[in-house]
Length: 396
Ligand code: GLA
Image (cartoon, rainbow, N blue to C red; front, top):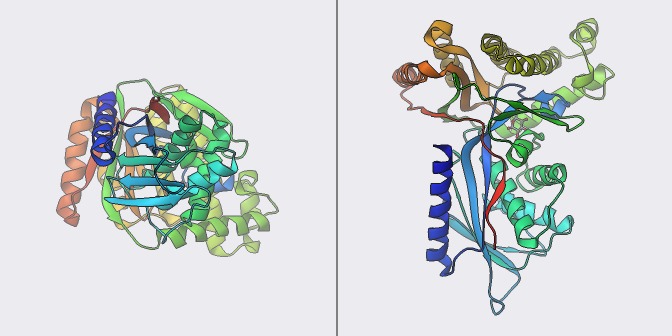
């Protein structure tokens, strides 16, 4: 099934490329979106995260421009965004905040700094990662761009350097001070594995998720509240301020006991943010251990605790996400739900729910149906096995 989705996207990209540029692509690359099982809003506190790549990809097809084509530019067409842009290769500039090509321009700039010198090229971008749904559509276009430049120049970047360069593009060109989770999982995800990433040492442990009796279900609330950008930056600085007051270089080094004994030094809001981060880091390690033993009820319990902490202490949830989690929770283990939580940055986007595969359809039906009745918004439901990270699909 998953391979078919990607195959179709690739075939479509090749066809559209040829229609658009009257020439077949020399390279086709793919990079996935992701869902985070647990470890939310802790990557920038040096914590642990446990995401997996999903079988929804950003695909880029490209070929070198003929020698007589004027200028030293990359011409990039987006099917998803229905637009085209010329990017000057030796000085990629960025447009208004939120423009899709900022990610591409930022990664081209980063790759050039890393010594990759692509010749002028045509490219076409398409994607089936839902945009703005908290499933890292932006990381997928960044990592796909870096993968394309590697293929075009015949240079393989160190995977960690590649993920960091993509993160840098997001900081500088898209203006979001994100952590490292999304770019790491898109670049380094493995089929049938969750990725336990230590965001401090950047060490990765691939944990098998091959038990077909459980399914990872992603439900998109299809709402996106404004302010998610500024709120994100604010959370990040509150964590940094809290760590500083605790005398720690990041919240990774703090304990709940230490936090409680220093409570008076922190603003109440900093205390709550820190309580989320410290407890979430511990929950993520516990969840990784429970996945290894196939203890799904325990993983589910930790997911629910994560959601409550994100909702109450970190305040990044919203009524729609809370409703989705509550509706899944109502079904409980008997109804096939081990646990559910918001996933990604928050303020809209998706929930992730661990369900018994045999009950997946009835869970989706119940949660989506009641959600729609109560909100008048139609949610979208998708399920995914852990998918393969970025790769070259076709190379000349
Ligand atoms: C966004 C960021 C990530 C991470 C999550 C929250 O997806 O890009 O770095 O901080 O939010 O866990």
